Amino acid sequence: MVLNLPDEQKVQFRIGVNYQRAMRLSPMYPSWYAGTLENAYRLLGRYDEAIASLNSYIKRDPEDVRIARAACRYLG
Image 1: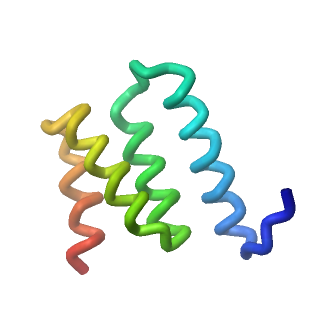
Image 2: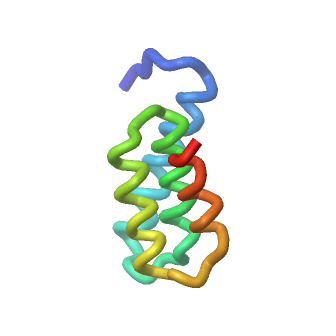
């Protein structure tokens, strides 16, 4: 597969692919995996997927303060 993306976006894309694979292979993944995936999607401009990942993060660990920080990114 050839990606026609700037270098930083290629890195974020690979991160997203790797974290998706890890989450599929181990359903008991750490909650921060979803946060990392959210960040990769956001940096790629895939906001719907980023928000879905953030919602997954919230469901897994609602007490994690990193969630609030991630959510604030969408508020501007």
